[in-house]
Image: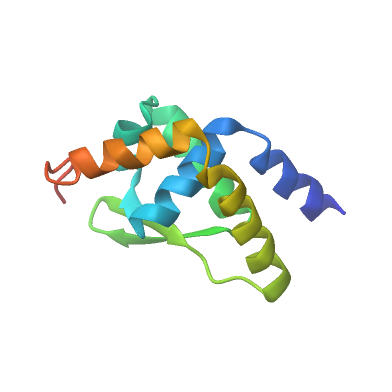
Length: 113
C-alpha cells in the first residue's frame, strides 16, 4: 500500500504531470530542458523528475555531468496506468502549450554537454 501512496502522491501535482508528459513527448531530456520548457525553477524541475524516477516511471542515464531522463520500462499494470495518465493529460491546454514551446526551442540548444 505504501508504494501506491507514494505513486499517487507523485502524480498529485500538476508540474510533475507536465514533466512526465513532456519527457514522454521528448523521448529523452535533461532537467535543464524540463526547466526551460515548463518554465520551472531548477530545484522544482529537479524535484519533479526525481519523484517520478523514485516511483519508477522515469529512468536516468548520466553523460558526463548531465543526467538524461526518459520513460522507464514498467510491468504491464504500471505501463497501462502510465499510459492512461499520459492520455488524460495530453489534451490539457498547458501540456499542449509545453509541447509547442518544446518545438520552438528544439532548434536552440538549451544545454550543451
